[in-house]
Amino acid sequence: MKSILIFAVVLMFTPLVQAMNMSSISNSCHCFKDRDLDPKRKFATDSYLLTTSFNSFIAANFHISKSQIVMMKMKGGVDPDDLLIALFVSRAGGIELKTLFSVVENGGSWEDIFASKSLQVSDADLQTFTDLGAVVEDKEKAGELVTDSLLKDFFSIGEQDISSLRREGATGREITLVYLLEKYGKRDAAATEIYAMYGKDKMSWGEIAAFFGLTPNATGKLLLNDG
View 1 (cartoon, helix red, strand yellow):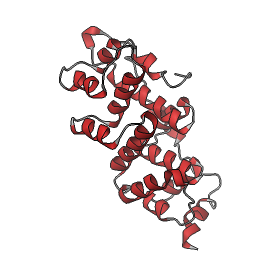
View 2 (cartoon, rainbow, N blue to C red; view 1 turned 180 degrees about the vertical axis):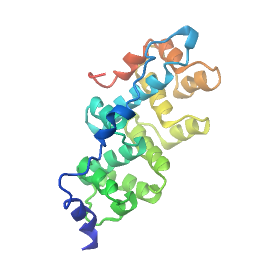
View 3 (cartoon, helix red, strand yellow; view 1 turned 90 degrees about the horizontal axis):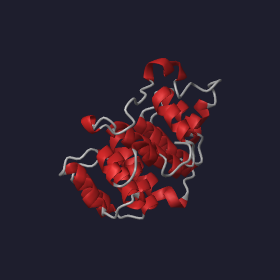
View 4 (cartoon, rainbow, N blue to C red; view 1 turned 45 degrees about the horizontal axis):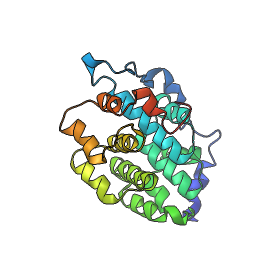
């Protein structure tokens, strides 16, 4: 009985709680104004570049539209780490996103969800799901774990490749951009060399993308067609 309680509770709420919190649209939309590289303000586009490329990466991995991700994070007020956890659990356990967000919105926790025996996790996601459940109380760490898992599968890289970049100070978004540039850039360079351009040479990500023949906007469209 306990194993299905958390999901049974959700079904009692009609309609489903506004997990995306659409009432906050007017207050939480953080639109990027700097989308084109300006040599005089070379770091101005970095936030946009990292965000748009990462959103495309997430959309491609979970087969949802990039616009849906933007709506949930920027207009719906969904925490980025919560979204990563929810997308992974939704895929692994076959649970709708609205149901997962409703559980959390109504007092449930990710720990409760991971402890639920009613989740039938796919074999392909079982190890990551188990690892995620062990750290999910720390949402930032959980978000990193999901990101690293996606990076390893999508780019066919090893744990040591990611760990070496993280030791240099790279974030998950930066590592994603590094491997996008390595794979799709118009110049040949290893991931460590690309990150060194930022970490050691103090180039902006906009400058680095331009070096590889890509604008910030084009980088965000590498994996998708909806930009």
